[in-house]
Amino acid sequence: MGVVMSTNLKPPFNEETARAKVKAAQDAWNTRNPELVAKAYTVDSQWRNRTEFFKGRNAIIEFLKRKWAKELDYKLMKELWCYTDNRISVRFEYEWQDADTGQWMRTHGNEHWEFDENGLMSRRDMSANDYSIKESERCYR
Image (tube, rainbow, N blue to C red):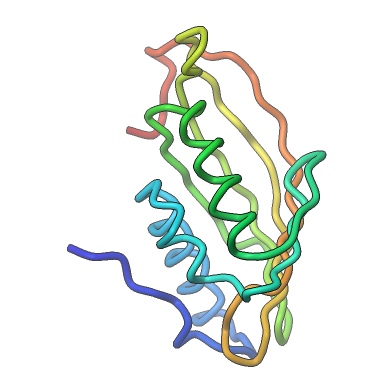
């Protein structure tokens, strides 16, 4: 079963297409495949991820490689929060095991997305907080 690429979901969004776009993003990120994930973004996509600011698919790929080398057993849930013509906001949770310490973590946050006319994300703005959990407290497997 492959991940459905979401570029056929183009603005303007309605509730159905916004939910489908969020589900496609969740599924792609759960592959932990940086090259696959990066295909959903414009070549010059602008990102803010916590305190990191960068631009472009190559930077996205390098960021995701670093992320998933540290965040082992990453499992993500995204939920549609709101949408407009070419923007979507989501809340998310994900769990992961720290590669350095073995500690299980849960991350909560939100993202604001902006899309070009072809359905590629041109801007991603992410805020999140992490906290320690016990392995027995995991919700996503």
